[in-house]
Every structure is written in structure tokens, then in C-alpha cells.
Image 1 (cartoon, rainbow, N blue to C red):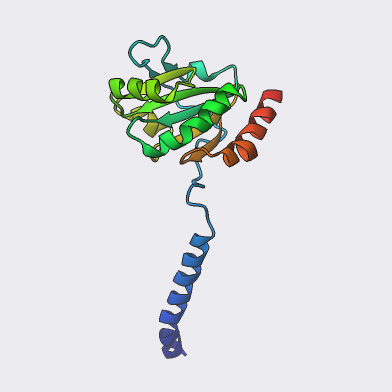
Image 2 (cartoon, rainbow, N blue to C red):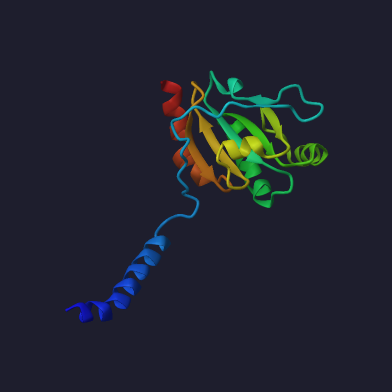
Length: 178
């Protein structure tokens, strides 16, 4: 009996690995769970980019439903999502604030000058420490924060019109009611 099990063990292991592999294909790689969902944003204070009045802080995220976008001028997907964020801020009335991740201030300012600036405020995260506290894997990432300053939604990768229409706008509407 034991001898039969020893012969079946490689087959069982192969089947187990195969099932795990196939289940991995069913998942969206952008659907990364965040331990911070429904928890307060980490306490932080970031200075503004040079020439701007307002930076970003955890206290500044209370009072209104806010989308916090983590971007950098060197990030190519950030440029792809920028028109989506601009429309969200200008046409949908969603307050969008930003964490500028590990970027040179002059590069970030030039990027905003070139592509437009939809952000109500931007905090310069020069060493990326605040981004790490937010659980950022890479840029771009976006977080929806409720009026009490709790993270309610996280999106990894560039925002698309589909994500905005199907996930962000309905959640903004729901959070503004409460």
C-alpha cells in the first residue's frame, strides 16, 4: 500500500501544481488585495512641488471623497492614464490629489506643464517612503479615500475609462451619500 502511494505522489504533486497554475490564469494580475482597505490612510506629510502652495498630508484627505493618484514623470503608463484622470477631475467633479513618487521636482513640473495638471494638490515623495506606507507596488496606482480619511478602493496600474465608469464613479457616489 505504501509503495503504491510513493508511485502516485509525483502524479498528485503534478496535478496540484497544474491546478494552481490554471487558477492563476483566472485572476486579474492588477487585482492585488490591499491590507489598507477600510483602514485610515497612513499618517504622513509631504511637501509641495516647488512653486506650488499645497503638498499632501493624511489630515488633508479628510472631509471629501478623494482619489489619490501615485504618479511619476518617468512612468509611461502614468502618461496613458493622465487624460482619464484629467476627465475625472474636470468633468466628473472628483477631487484628485497626487503623490509624486521618486521623481525630480523639475521633471515632475515639466511633465505637468506638458500634459496638464488635474491635481488639487501634490505631495513630493522623494524617497518613496510614503508610497511604501501606502502599499504601493509601482506607479501608477490610485486609491479612493472616503470623507473620514479611510482607504476604500485601490487600483494598480493605469486607470481606464472602464475602471472609472464601473468602479470609481459608483463608489464615489455611494461614499458621498454616507
